[in-house]
Image (cartoon, rainbow, N blue to C red):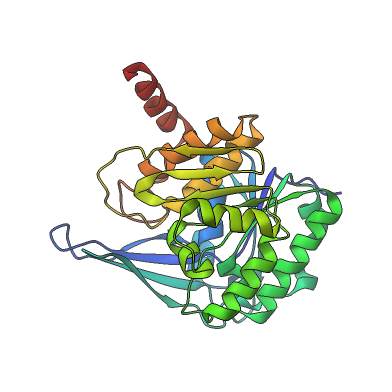
Length: 313
């Protein structure tokens, strides 16, 4: 069996162009995005070993991602390069209503991934496999690849974490509900956000949403509620973490930062409450700059804030 990091993420990386609000300058800032690769970087910055499985184009964008992952200590040894398909691109703009995404990702290299391309030994050697609904939505073959990866993880006793990230530009709501609910039933940690879950379940109450996903079969539900903190639910306990107050600049990568930080702390031995408290602070800190990756805090930054909070109590 090949050596694998503790957390293996599967999905589509996106070169990001982020345009700040008026008053902050109107230049497009080139950065990096893609929810699953954000999770890998967030986990690595918290001290966990993380790796990424995807396909990149033979372009400058693919080269830039490989350079990024090397600098961030994210293992990319199982990343392939497609001979003709490009690396995907996202554009993020900001208004008073929040951030908006536009994409150039049709027929991207990652969307052409096939189940037979998966490094099965690599997945089997991890402790967590992380996938998201976006990775499933980008194409039929990518969805089949995610399903095959989850099957391989289960066969090897690897836990599956799953973010329900909902992008209705990629599929309709009925298709999203069907696939997401089926995947929740196969995951060990469900990582939904409140706004997505309200659309997916037609429920409004965080407790009702948590109950819905627990009933589907997820042993742990970590419901991200943005400015209201998070709710952690299992069959035996329910924990509410209040938000950490910050001045919001850009929440593009906040949910992904929570995911990677939460997994990293569980791997480090934290209980659910401690891991959620840590991830809550990390996610809040990630909103203080533009872009999905650049503002993700490192472990020392999060610990300094947690220490300050503890000292103020």
